[in-house]
Length: 408
Image (cartoon, rainbow, N blue to C red; front, side, top):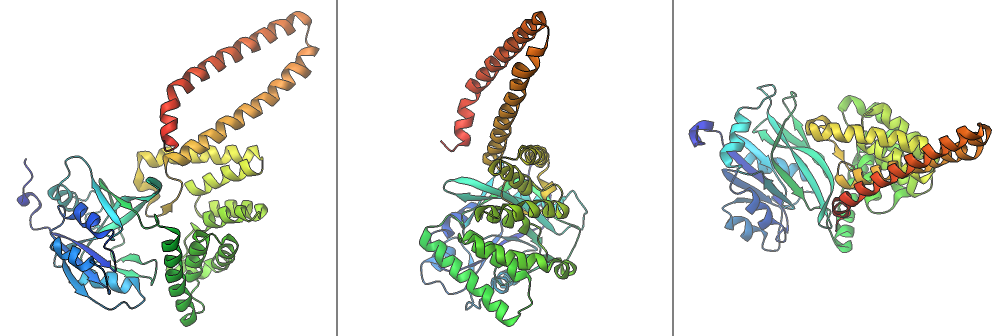
């Protein structure tokens, strides 16, 4: 059957956005999405550049609202203006990449024939966080919603509250590249000041809003103040039981605190947090990566191997089924981290193997009968020669892919 509008009935999709002074990014974003949506709806919160002009050149309907220090408020406004029955939430600093042959009708057919519970009202896609020209993190993000079935909460890190709890259908027809953290030092500082200012303002009004400490931990760690970030993160963890009923406890805090405790030299607390974190999320890729790095930093082979094995197992499972990690932000789900873990594991096995070989040759062989010593030593030499020859061949074949992993 050929793809026609009749195949998907009257199903329509609106791209909804909130923007302010996004002339550097907006055209790239709108150009990437214009052919897969039926309308583009934008709430502008006070742009002073060419943002509105660019938006209107793509046929977008632009609504003007003064900025009210609340991202979710304006996100919800943009969705209310949409006339379509599904909304695609996207930001100006993002770009959609379509799979081969993907069209508006292909996407609509997926939505119409969502494979998991038929009353599911949302669709998730893979998002790639781009920095310095490469992907540094991948995560799933729910972006398409049936209109009226979602609203956003949170003044800074606005999160969708889906009214239908059957979960999102994962769609691999397209991917979203996010460039929001690929900033100059000056822009990073400005973003930090804006974000932290909003959070502190919220805490002044609501001193026991413990969720705000999660966001403070994140922004201070991103801003290269790990000590302060760890302090805020510990406050957040201390109140996790109070946060659970409202589903506002985010276990990704453990990875953030592990990495930043390692940065400030608090290795014992970092180790404690690794195991505390695994109690919350037993198969977590980031914590497995952190355990591996902790083992390297502290020359603890058991931790390195334990973390490395768990990392490779989880990584392989997630590549087979991206829906397994839900909507969590996962920093270590990329080929660069996999290469690093495999390098650590390979080197550690060589070092550990050499220790056992030393014991074998210098302590055990001398106690064997002379004729058995010579035969055993000959076998060891032959095995090592064969192994190094095979490793050399494999490295020679792999040198180009490994160079690519390093970004060359």
